[in-house]
Length: 119
Image (cartoon, rainbow, N blue to C red; front, top):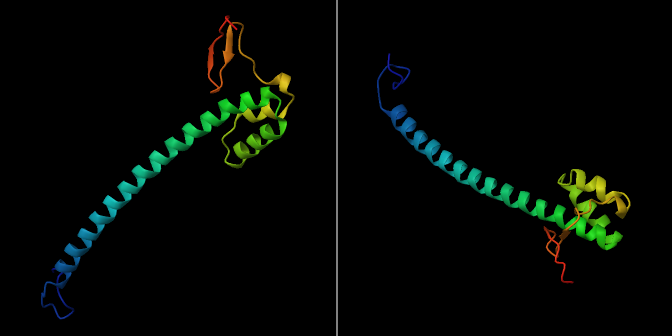
């Protein structure tokens, strides 16, 4: 028995044509899904990079004594579940905020660098 037949048993070819059409649709959908997945992965990487930068800069904000801005940073990091230990450190007093080791400092970008002794 062929799957390409009418209930009366006469083959007409409609099923084969429909299967071929549907296979083309599946291929198109798979390609579109793969493209969307690639875009989502790129966006996730961008979000992770921005979150990392936000966490680094948040320490500088906290150390600067701008508690209102530090609080806003905490709320943003909490809202998107991006903060981790940064939130715990920023919610407490500024003296508990991590400090650079001797000879090191955090520059204006929030990056740990060797301290310039010429200042």
